[in-house]
Every structure is written in C-alpha cells, then in structure tokens.
Length: 203
Image 1: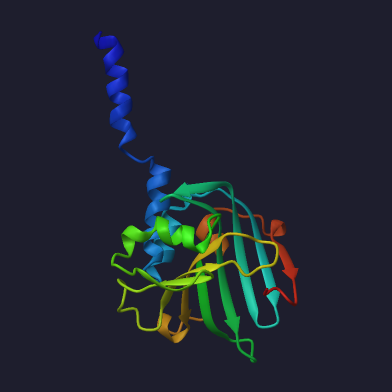
Image 2: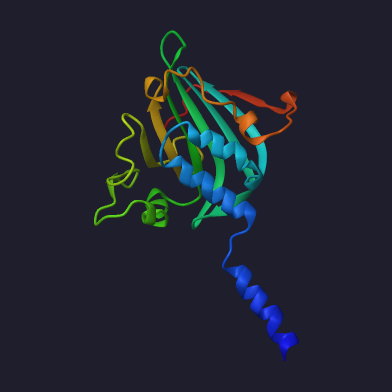
C-alpha cells in the first residue's frame, strides 16, 4: 500500500511548485510591469526560461524593431509567449527619442488582460479599447512610463503585445536599450542575424 501511495504523494507535492524555467519566466513578466530598467537585469538573469530561435532586426524610416522568436513558445501566467521585442523611435536626426519593450502573446489584448488581472486589482482594472488597454490601478509612480496591452502592429502577426513605453529622459537619458543578443544569448554568431528593411509596417 505504501509503495502505491508514496509516488502519488510525491507527485502531488511537486505539482504545487513551478519548474525553475516556469518560475523564471514568471519573474521576467512580473518585472515588466514596473516599466523601469531593472526589467533587463531580471530578463538577463532568467534567460534560461526562454529558448530563442531567431533574432530579427527591422528598420523603418524612424524606427528600429528587434524581435527574438521563442521555440517553443513559453507558457506562463496563463499566457503563451511567442517572442520578445523592443522598439526604438528615432527623431529626424536619427537620435533615439522613445523606447518600448516587452513580450508578444498568442492571446488577444482582452485575453491577456483577463490573465493578468490579479496584478491590477479593482472594479475597473483597465481603461482603453479592445485594441489597447492600460491598467487603472497600481504602478502609478512611474512618471511618464506606461505599461499597456496592445494589438500587434506588424503586418501578418496576431495576438497582443505586453509592452512598456517610455521616453528617453524618463529612463535616465539612456541612448539605447540593451542589445537583445546580450539579453538572451551567452554566445552568438553575428552572421546569423537577419536585418530586414521595411517601409510601411504599421497597419
């Protein structure tokens, strides 16, 4: 009898604990909500939770977009994360003026908002439209930094972006976000990076 019960009890005990990779992915997503540069430290520390498949760097007239695709997608907090991305807005002198960064999920913006509701409590936790939702409570002292759940903007994509937006000055006058290669890879073959130029990438 004990031989039968013991494996079952052990299995039940471990079922209550997330794997190290799942816990790392959860910490990375939670660090995103504050929209400050500590997120990049957490992401670099927890990169073992993500399996990057490819890196794409896309340039438009006044924007640079870096995308890291995950294979397989990462299941965390009831979401299916398919990639990490960060964007740099460039002014007419090609100097950075604003940044955004975060994850892309398979779910719709409304689906993401429902999955994350425990982090944004209240009777009306979000404001906005079905295409872009912003929390109404919590993280109110960010001074110009915004977390949002938004419809994807690149043509041919689906799902939602969990993203932070900030001007350069609100991040301490930094000139660039950390390179995505440094965030996700210990070593990297630079010849494998795909650079794509597109002109009209917004819907």
